[in-house]
Amino acid sequence: MSEPDLIQLTLSDAVSLIERGELSPHRLTEAYLARIERLNPVLNAFLTVMGESALRQARYASEALRRGERWGVLHGIPIGVKDLIDVAGVQTTAGSDFLRGNVALEDAYVVQQLKAAGAIIIGKTHLHEFAVGATNVNPHYGPARNPWNTDYSPGGSSGGSAAAVAASLCAGALGTDTGGSVRVPSALCNLTGLRPRAGRLNLQGVIPMSWTLDTVGPMAHTARDVALLMDALDPQPVGKNGYTAQLDQPVGSLRVGLPVDDFFWLETDIQVVAAVRTAVERLAEVGMRPVEVSLPMSEEVLRAAGVISLSEAAAYHRERLSTGPERFGEDVRTRLEWGAQRSAVEYVLAQRTMHRWRTFLKELFGQTVDILALPTTPLPAHPIEGSEGIAAAKTLLRFTYPFSLSGLPALSLPCGFTDDGFPIGLQLVAPEERRLLQAAHAYQGITRWHLRRPIL
Image (cartoon, rainbow, N blue to C red; front, side, top):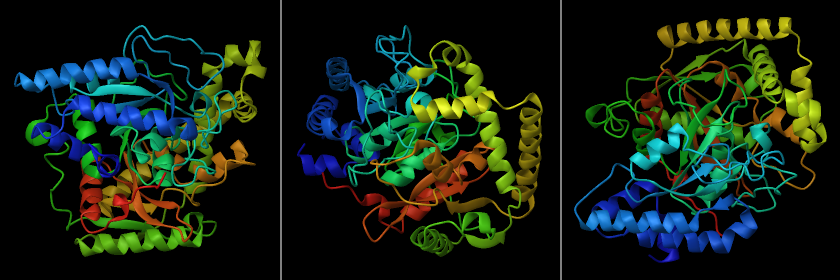
């Protein structure tokens, strides 16, 4: 496979080529590893490249196909895994100084699911330290870089996963999403990224940030790619009930709600506003009906989400904060110390806000809309030089954190570019992952934003 062909390849394309015998898993893995060797020193997308084991598994996968065997929906597909998620025999650093050399004894549940579906784990991707941030500017391992402009952040905390997929270093990747850590880097790197419903995917073997809000989510180029990853990750029966099997279901009857509240628009880049509003108009072209809605609790919910997630993060890291606070990056330590200072009363009130918010959205989806559409981030990617982690997180997570607190699935997909060439993300929220993927797939059927690739 030539490099130009590899760059344009989606996960779904790779699956089809392998199924038809036109591409071997071994050749595909070799091509990705060659590109990793050339580009990872610049992008810093992978903290650990599992070249030897990936090639070995690719040979096994190729031999199995010659015997007429197919292991699953991801047979022979190289996937990156965020270095917060355990892969047996490989270190899980969580992007931290504390966990250098921390070798996992067994695979996380989601990695078990990937392997059972035939995927090849090609490496562990970079992240914001302990996932407590949104820039991937990491004092211990250096910053991951955005393939669209390597002077800029890919977002975080799953920035390495996003950079790896956007730069065609792997076919897809896993991230984690607490406040927006799959959706934000997907938006800033022109990917489709899904935060599944709370509790949808088992978190065994994933280092936590917030027990209440943590999820694992897939990241890839298209809604079809993400649906394939969900078919592997979600242990429910596939076939006619699978995510890809239902992807082409009609969406023409769906009501799409566009918030009118100033919270979503007043401090948002005008090019982001224009792209998102145009995207909603394009959704109307496939039959969806735009509806104006108000989400008046959003500011209150944003603060509550921060109280819950950072209080829980501080609880998880309480011993490290006590014995070695200097080993944290400055922005992460500051956020954890803020979380440690929240009172029990604040935490309980935040939980109450969460329950009121969930009740409000349940009624909204039951009576008024089927899906919500809004910007993923208020701004496109920002420069790494001079980046201030706390301020950046406050800005980048503004529209994703509230929907983490909802417990509902949310998805970001490409919907445009700024005049200077940075991707813009559209965030969709709905009660079911399938509905999100169906709407995203319909939108990608009439637009071409997701087809663009960075030039490296």
